[in-house]
Length: 201
Image (cartoon, rainbow, N blue to C red; front, top):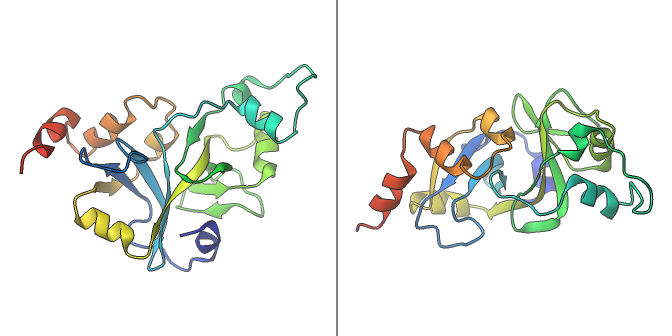
């Protein structure tokens, strides 16, 4: 599923607003130990963002890349902008930035993905954040994760993913190292036990 499909969707699918939590046997290294927030699911496929994988770039790096600030000029950003989190959202269009954010900010290009969360992929939100404005809660993700029609359903049926309702606190939580374990704990599952059980036929 593409971003344009997300914009044009008519109704929410079964996995909309769900977390996908990778099972220990996940063979695709792009998704090993990942927690993914599904933004859109329909007969055409699914789209979402990994929410627990760090990105080496900083928000300042992003602003320099976009020529929104100049390297030779003193870089003075509000503390909130300097600390703004950048994550790896998935292997598709990995050079493109997306901002998942609370619904207290909206532009003409913002797309509601749940009752409380929006997605904006244009420069206006980057400018707002760089000035200390923008949404109260947000994270930038480079790239996204996508599944063709029927692909995600097959992966879930084949025990590739656990699913559960998404937790907004976890989406915007900046502590990434143990987010996988905490997502499982939210389902009442101990990650260590899951790993041990996954090795048995």
